[in-house]
Amino acid sequence: MKYPEPLCRLEDILDGGAIAVEPLGVAAISLLLLRQGEQVFAYENACPHAGQRLDWSPGKFLFDNGLLVCTAHGACFKIADGICVSGPCRGESLQAVAVEIRSGEVTLARD
Ligand code: FES
Image (cartoon, rainbow, N blue to C red; front, top):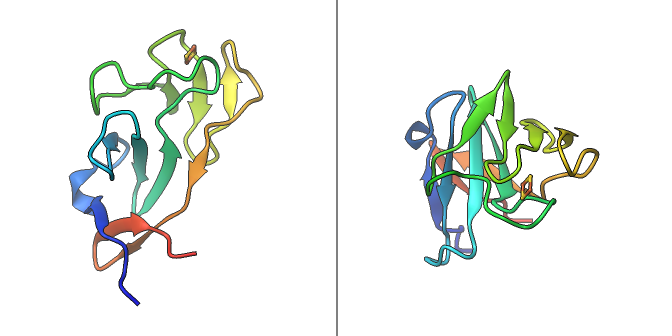
């Protein structure tokens, strides 16, 4: 079985930071990858409030006190589970995407 193409290398994401990737090569289908040490949390790069991208410029994200901030209207999300803890979509969640890391490469999970 062929393994999925890598989304990026772990080292492409600063520890505590985030990047956006477009696995199909189109900006409309964007994933948000957040790194915490050796872990990567992945979500669709679309806010549950109004569906806008969360980055203020492609691949540039805001953080406040360890929370990811949607640049459109300020919703704040926990990194580890994508739950919105303040803002207009409080209680809703980012759409999680399963990824895994093998040999330093971040890929979509097989299952
Ligand atoms: S689109 Fe994210 S807070 Fe409104």
